[in-house]
Length: 454
Image (cartoon, rainbow, N blue to C red):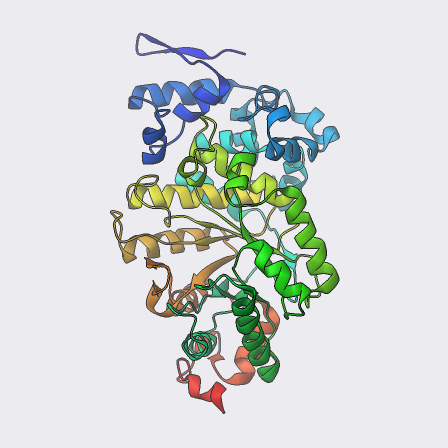
């Protein structure tokens, strides 16, 4: 294994696989904050040269956190298909990249190959790709999952309806929910971030979601994004829950900061399968985002892309229905501006799809970041081109509870129209039956929530 190269008359020597992966990363303010980023563009290029010539075996043998010390590493390594890995372990990262971009390798071939990959291999390939490479490769990969409906099928683009309210007022929540439905949002999930993380509050919102869904026979899923333990208790008490949610990290220490481990997540999954309302078998919802491990001092000296890829390897174990990167939520300390946010969104989507999970994106930013709504719309268009499964839907893209900016109800509808896509098929039929959509375009009834108050 060679960890040095000569470029423009200068020899660049890297300390470890982890070190060269970090320095091969595109510019991210979080990597600079952690003191692990390349010090110059020349050093970054040199690192990419070294990474390109590492073998997949080199990367498997040098995970970001040692197997003995970290549950996430153990889950990723133990889930590798050894037969497939043996076929490709002597490939270089450059060869993996070329194979993924080869027009003759389709979704089925890529999905098979992905079973022999670890998170570090997937992250390394992403570091050698341009933005168009990330879009082209991800677009070839189809990943579906089924809860009550099936997400990720070709020709569809879904939306999580996120009717957050600053006081969890039931009427305020319902006003956003009903309006969003008329714009075609909500086929991925009706999912609220609660202010009050109590069992009583979670049950109250789930009961209201369940009532609206049943009254209008809406084919979708419902979820309240409280801590996993709160949701589990609500389910035990009889709350009508389809999906159990949790934010996750790419290291055991990061997950401990979120108050979870693999055993708890599997317990939640089994509870949802046993006592939840969904058809299944996919009953988990995870959110991630580059930089979260650094914010909890749980990155172990690894860069943001590697740690994010490890999130997806962890998520895959639990057969999720939804996974999304909340790409610009964590702030400029980790992704400084729109260029970094767009790059991270494309990286995350590609890595999630290559891992084999149904990947969406909360294309978003915070108000103290150097980004604006046009930047986020740019990212949404690029991700739609890349075959992203779903986005968020919030009134006017302005979350009045979490205080960040994301995609609104109109964006998903416009993207569907521009790209010739629909909502998940049963939900699309419901929209047409209700008169909200005709010929794949919103009708004059879109936005008139009074129809659902009748």
